[in-house]
Image (tube, rainbow over all chains, first blue to last red; front, side, top):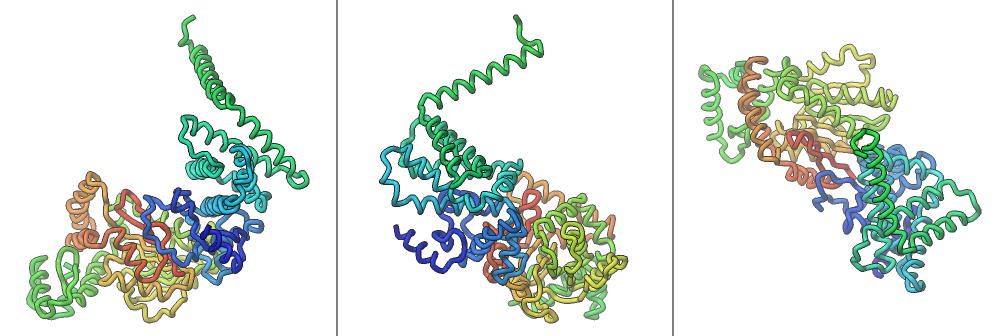
Length: 260
Length: 288
């Protein structure tokens, strides 16, 4: 709760999109290695970004995304606007992917803070989860016109590990906030299911032109209903296994390795 | 040997023979001022002598410097320097101060990057080196360059860049030079002074190989192959022994990163990136 008060105070003086959490170091980075600043051999905890100038630059760069896209140019313009040399774009060491990763960390933090006091209103875990998912999608809404570019950058082979880390981190965090603190055996399956739901909805949202994005919310609701059916997850695993063996059999047969 | 003939000019002393007499000369000097000494490879020398000795080493290797780099690293130094510039990712119009720039490898790559990637022709490079012979090699490299106004050369000491104003450069680079400086902390502090706010400090230097197996191979290459190559190609074994020893005396990655932070720079993550298993490391910091 004190974190919330702190960030509210900071929000008053900020001029960046993530008003609630901009002056505070992304908690995701410290606690869950969200990967906002790729750190090479490993996070040693020695960096001295105490005045958070690098975060200020990155936050301001997010406001430049409409004009310059997800790129080093956006970060360079943000640095120049803050009165620094354009070489300070190096705070996004890998360029576009660093900026996108920073956005994802901020969005997750913002979601965590925002849903904090509203979760008790929901009856079931599923409803809770849907609300959290909606909140997170609303973080992407301001950037929705440029999000396809970000998705393309995330899909590049060198960025896939980071993209997977971010997605699974998001999924775990959303399940955790929804109240699922169990360690049941199907935890991985449920995490992947939520990740798939989230990802498909986000991509749908990029193309959605309906008023108030109502098509997106309906799409999300449908996906959640699919996911709810418990047997779906199990049957998906079985179906996948079945499909895999069928394909393998067909390949071997076409090569002549299967005796009849 | 060329390196030792420098001493003969500066201090008229007894006839110098190869290697051993130079150590005797240095020992005598050390006894006069035992408190302020530093390392010169594996030898201990008075601090104020180191600059002269280093200048001597590089005067003797200047002409064959590029060839020797190729031979010692089997051409890999070119990849290191390419990666260094890509990591720097200079922005259009950036001003580079290349210290210990010597033969101009970094300056050349910087200008090429600006031309090819940014299409920018307003960026400039100012090259500083303590050794006039190395700088002459650099000038020679750029003499056919179409726009000589973008490069300037000056003889100077990295520890006190007296001719350079505060906050006047966007990026400061020192590639394979800082281990030769008597006081690396002083160099880093000077870098902090001359950089603009938001400016970037970048240092490319030989560093520690952590992996013990690779370290053993690297040590063998350093102490057995390189001095012999020096003798064969450049005719100067002692200078290359010095170069190899100076690598071992330079602080390891984390320690140097802390020196950079102590000077006031902000580092992201652990502040360095290892190349080729730690043979070489790029340290970087921002002036915020």
